[in-house]
Amino acid sequence: MTIRIVTDSACDLPDDTVERYGIEIVPLNIRFGDEEYVDRYELDVASFYDKLASHDALPETSAPAPGRFQEAFEKQAAAGADTVLCINLASGLSATMESAQQAAKNVDIDVRVIDTQTVSGAIGLACIEAAQAAEAGKSADEIVADLTEKADRTRIFGALNTLDNLKKGGRIGGAQALVGNMLAIKPILEISHGHVEEASKQRTRKKAIGWLRDRALADDVEDLVVLNGFAADFDEFVDMLAPKYSRDDLFVGTIGPVIGTHAGPGVIGIGFRSKA
Image 1 (cartoon, helix red, strand yellow):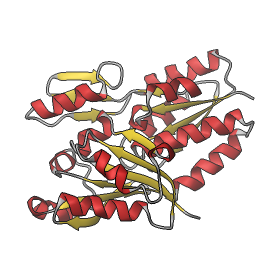
Image 2: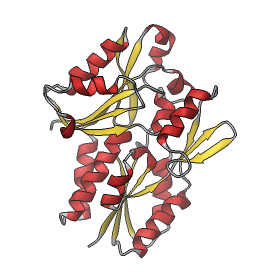
Image 3: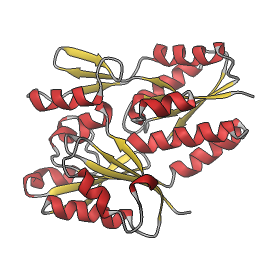
Image 4: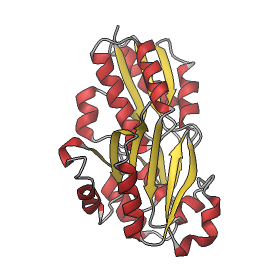
């Protein structure tokens, strides 16, 4: 049985990893005012952050149309796949998974649509693990069960420089209480089980980064990924993890346009699974 992986562009996987595992990425769309771009194809990460700095209006994101997923599924079927695992951005944060589910009904190939309940590099990690498991000969049922179990344990924490993007983008969720005080704090948000919640309020950026460091080094952490949105102090943060992780040990990801639109510039994040 041949199993192939399809995901969406919120995965923030680097191109070499996508090529290595033959992962198909269905892009979301990014709009700056009247200008709309197809993520990864018409707008790369560096260009996105340049535009973010130079535009007064915040960008918006939109889910792919079901037809884009259908094309991806049919492409994999034509290439000889028996089953497609479609590994997606949290359904609580985007209509992307819904588009994938609609498309899956319109194709003959067996498609399993999986809600990672997370964002960015944590999605990417799930895609890599699924691809490796498929290469090792595991069945689709086994891989789906593993991904589903891990999704329940996956957590992401992000230290934001601003809440403006999250507030105006409508994704603030359970962190709403931070808004009235956002000028006085450096907020840390948590995404778990597909929802955004307040994790901590720190008075300075240094303290916020220290909070992330302590959380990353905690005993309950496994499968750590570290993420950033072109943060000037990201290398400093990675060095702070040295007591437990060398740079070669870490899965380091750059937060792309889909999540960067809502998190804003300068965000630093960690993603991990709580130990079972």
